[in-house]
Length: 492
Image (cartoon, helix red, strand yellow):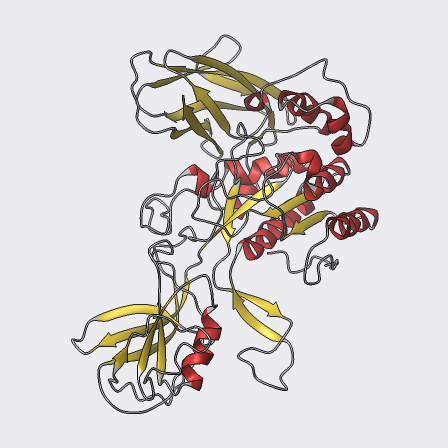
């Protein structure tokens, strides 16, 4: 993302990640004067004053340091996020347009596409017996005849796929197929498996090498953790998604138990891959716009993110259904557009204090985060924080009013109107711009404008299900800028 950036690496984990080590590493990074922090770790949801990453990240943000955090790899379960604080960028994982394509050909000539990093050129592609022992764990194949056969193994949480491959190989299998469970959906993994040659036709594996330019990408990764936000239900998380599947990454050990080989590169996946992508893009934006705050940079990426794939269709999840805001956040990052967002939603460090008061934290608990004296003379609801998204709880007949302040970072003389507002049936939205309902105008860079958004739920609405979603989009009169803010609704 930012190939000329200077990297400083802080080791904070061995076999476990101690909170004190994480704090020490982050504090050292701040002291060293870094500009962007990428944190590919985190703990389960907890109050922010107990969360070491959240506390240290607030300190970093106060120093003008942008913090990009992994959203977690516990999807597609709902409410499975890590790093939920609004002062960090919480990143989900989605696919890129590259596959290491292999295809299973069955005896009836049916073709099933999959992936493997290991694609030997000398494999003869003859059909071989296909066996399904159910388990491919350690020792499970001792009494199963798999020699010279293609072995079908299920994904499970007990044994990783590479270990399964070694079991099949040691038992004399010719090849292995890893089959997803229902939860994993259509996601495939590219891993360094193996093939051996033998006879007895039933199934075989065809190797196609690297395939690029796929039009259905990006897609949400099934493992990418999902919202809603538990620590702060009124803040939409994740914030954004980025490339986190089949990423070429440096690797500290040999691959495939190859004795004597040195550290190498590996195709890896996870929000630990997408998080540094967003950190790199943050570095690019910070180099071009050094005056922007961490909140402004986050806003620029969120309001310009994409919700469609390369084919122009909605980004889908592992089920092939349009991904919702709890998976996708604002969308898939678009670096080129983020460079020129037009408007940003800025937040200064002290703006978080009334927000934290609104969470019910005591002044003493808030002081553990902000590292200075705090009081709760002013309190705001979560949805009133100047965030580039809205989370709104509505009962039948309910009406909520929240405001947002935008800062002009585009053309000095510019105006914006609302291009579209989408909300679920039974909900209405009204936008008030200084008692005008049509145009928001600017005459200078860094000028600010405030508008109110009124959300109303019909008293007769009998909507089933607790959640809904929508969005609103501002567009500049010149057509150069679009500013999109997603909505998440909780119906009570």
